[in-house]
View: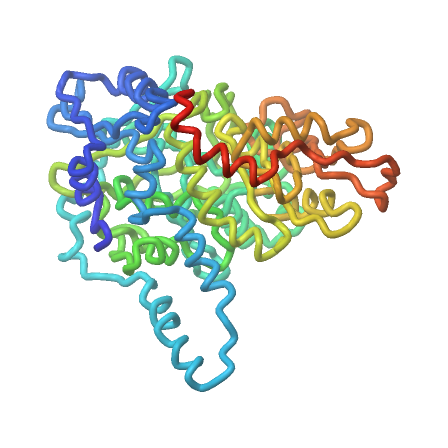
Length: 529
């Protein structure tokens, strides 16, 4: 049975020996982060890599509060969270849905009915408010005070406390589809936070659609688009508009809801690179094998996870920006101050005795590395749907997701590796990948030593490295401009005569299988291990 809520998940963590309860007094200001960081980096060379999940039960300054951290911080816990023995098994389920066998007879068609019925059962369902645990306590108006939550400050130079594991819910103004994304939120005071909507994220596009609706003047809309770009461009863009346009825009709102402390599949669905037309609520249902229960929010026209620990409701004023940051990020560096939209709270609902959830990002490996590895394995079939010659991919933790991708391919023609590079850069969030290394299909991309050997030996740097310009991640502090810079592709495949390589290409060293089998049979007797 899928986890109904966060509390089911915590019980399973404890049953599996994966949870450590912290009863000593610990402050949410830096101390929790330091403990979680040490836990995440412990046992790196053992089966206990990632340390335990942590439940802080004595939070300084917040009597009675509890905080869960590092819940996804190991491969085993990611598998427990998604209730599978293998992340690749979930990928196989996706492959079956993407490429079902074409029915050739009436009987074959009947065999497909259970699969179609299964997909239909994943759609979320809305339940009455009285049945929703997230509405056990409701705060409105002057009772709304975000400072009562045990929100963390994670690094010394952070601009303040940040909500780091939120499921941020918005609605596409054109299609009406809901989106669930994970964007950090800096707490300014009891009623407002920053909303770190990087320009290329879905919620930022929803805001741009609202800006287009708010300003019928096409010339003004061009300047308005800079409002979700961040930086001085965003901060100065309002200065180019006439007073009536600015007044109209600032009087318009975009409704937002935020869920904190959901079941693990729902939390995970907020970070996945979902196809544009697929709601994350549906992905959560697919992962859980059971539809997610939603409930209507109190003050905004959005549906929210009914079993969440906390729900924050409110709005973003179109055209309103505020300085956000610095923030110690998953790159291992601080993301510096920038201008981002402001979230105004209108209501907080929560369960009785709610459990707050948080994560800390920083120098890898950390909890997000295991979440990223799960994304890599589960959504490989979506990449292969567009680029079927891809055999496997690896996003090493040290590459912080968007800095390095290693790809193995079934090479079929001259220039094939370069085609793959450009295909990846044209694929959704993969467009941010700074470096792509392409190797042959017989190279295990998960073996970094093997990849290093192949890359160092198989390339002529001037011939096999290509550079291109394009969009880069907003967190890239080394790019020449915010959100825009260069990317590199390395063709580490064997070179063909059709690619202008006329010298003989040597075979790699490998022992005869007969000899290996014989040595395998006597290995234990040799007493070497």
